[in-house]
Image (cartoon, rainbow, N blue to C red):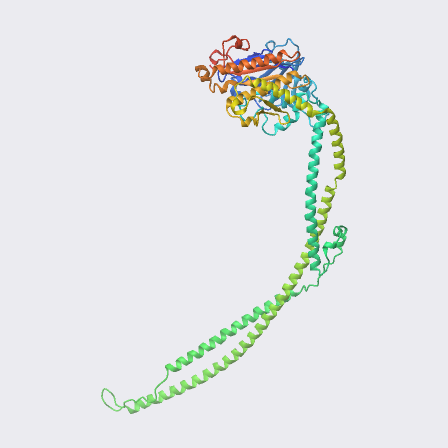
Length: 637
């Protein structure tokens, strides 16, 4: 499909930059940081990209980015304000207006957009309602359209337009944006873009795929529910078995049928009643109080008994200390004057006998009293100890009875819990059976699938895809034969294209090599260029294709000039770069000669520059240099 960029522009209030392109082949050469790569970013931005154009890459960030383009027979102006504009900012709005064939960005300024604000559309409306109008056979979504159907989008086309600087020599990714979730939609829309199917067939294919996915989901859910049902029936029978065991009912649950197992009335009619002594706790509490009192009484008697025993020990000790020997002889003469003192000694003797007599009386009387008291207390203590033992034994028995009562309560609680588990099992089984009983839904989907497959077989999409793959592979191989490629490692050029996975591979005699299997950046570059150009030659030759016939290549010479200094110093392989560009030019020129209605437009931005006529005739502008204020990024002064 003819898709030609006529001009791009960057507008500010007092200034504008415009780049005008040739219809077919375009070279833009420039130093680093002059805005070469920004050309691709501006085109993609104006086509609805969600990515902002980094303001740091363009000196004095423009207020509006514009592209003047031709789609088939329509001339269109698309513009987008900068992302963070205060009004109609580019994050949400895009300007689109049909213009005449004489229109040029040189003839308008920024006021044109203020005068035509009604031509600003939201991003969603632009992608779904406005831009599709200019793509032949592209289905236009109406505002009343629902979202029940999968719809193609123009935003899945950029992978087949742009080969960015980081991608063009990539050894693992062939197309832009083909890594990640977005690749799914690109692959889905690719057959429609190539013109292999129309929108009606596109819908049928997607519906066919949706039904297959839905049937798989149903089958997976059914399998899951069946497994869960087995578990739930096992749990249900186990719960029944436990319940019957506790109730001493000899019932084999394996003999019970589904009707009995799922009948909740059977569970509700089970009686779970027990006679439990509710006063046993109070009796235990009373007995514990008695034991506490009895224990204190026993302890007090023990103390009293111990005190009396201590008194008796003191009496015995005192008696020993007051003992007087009876056979002691006392002299009856004074040791000083030797005079007789017999009368004086007799007085002491009488006193001595009196003391001994009183001591014996007191000892005998007190000891007898204490021994009697001791005996009385001991007897009482022994009696109270026996009473305490009886009370403790009674308490032990009551507590045992209490444990039995607690066990019974727990058993009753457990039985009710089991009963609840049974009811839950029954409810879960019924829910699972309801969800798994979708035979009618499966049958309806299978009938719809069979009808769709019959229609799709008649169309023979497989044959169309094989023919398209053959053409694209053949065109790509033609291009690869003109570029450097390691034939010794990977065989003679023989590229094959895979529409389903939107990829390509090199078919050797005994092996196949995908891009990731191939080594060296030079081979990667040749692979990318060949597949991309081969695809666009197919697009050019098939008028049913709605893919834009536009190619943007960003610095393909980087393999040979890793740095700009290499080009300036002549240290890169200039001959290989020239040969590569001459091969691209010849391929494009030859392809365009065969087409009457459409032409491939290619825009190549690079450090490379040549004064030769073959290059100069396709050069869009003089080489961009900052010190000459040429390019989208000017030197700041």
